[in-house]
Length: 468
Image (cartoon, rainbow, N blue to C red; front, side, top):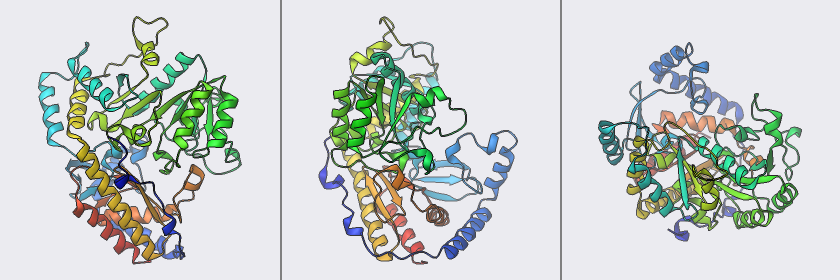
């Protein structure tokens, strides 16, 4: 599927440059406090479970991203576009387990496939035909993926892709973009969410900043940080580091760094820069693969050397994959010399394979177009509301993904994205929860959604902003 300009035209937000008014911060904080009080009253069972969890789970959770103050909701089940919490509240879910559930919750095709496979066995110490079927589906859909291997998450996919890039090139460093999220691997913990300040270095020469304690100097020194959407600086840095640089890793739509979409030709220039420097280009398509069947690389017309995948390809189960050029991936051949080993008890496990196969087979071109159209509709209607209300806000979308920014204009890099108004986002989150909608700063559309669900979100945002 090629780039459908009628649905995914390059965003032009100049029409949203206008005269803004400032929201009264005291009034906003009062509203947030009241919304949190109401949230606490509605979710007493979730609060009790969170308190119980403190004794056995550090901080009461085992997944950092699900925590928010004062406590997260605990879920009981999901069906279609809805989730249901332990207190009996039903929520229209635009989070879709961090975009992984493109078919929504408990899709019959996925449920049936998993149920049938469970009765046959959940895992074996030998390969199954299912992993061949799944591999062929991915290679058919993604032109740059000539061969592929499976793992258990997007994090593992990045770890393995970086390892093979280093093994193939014989070089020790990798480059990533400032603010980009690439999972929990060691190299991904550099400049993930750096706080603005002198330690970051200049905007065109970002410093390598560890995101948490435990990241060693050896890792810091092996990660070069690049500025997103700055082709000139990227070229200078990559050329300077080329002798030691194995690969550049990029999330092409920068979902973890404020959903800052690439400027025109930025990815094309990056491809040429890396080729000229003898550096591999790795696309992290763990999220962006849901844009269309061939992912962001098909949308932007750029062919990376390696691609990392996860989320939708596993059909809601744990799973990941990475693939690309056959000559690079050949290092994983058990008979290769030299070779790179990649083991894992659950790699290519039959449950994940059947869930992934069912999901990919359900996702026809028409379905990608449908959910993409709904996202564009949502973007247009929300931006119309923001324009009318004179609130500092803008919505952006690509494919079935969208993001609300409480900024005057769409951000173009991580440092601009960090200027987003966190208090307004907190207000919107709890306001929408009270309205029966589950959405953080950004979200995604699933196939069970329709115009009515978009209208529900738009109407809720409109009602909320009228208070200001």
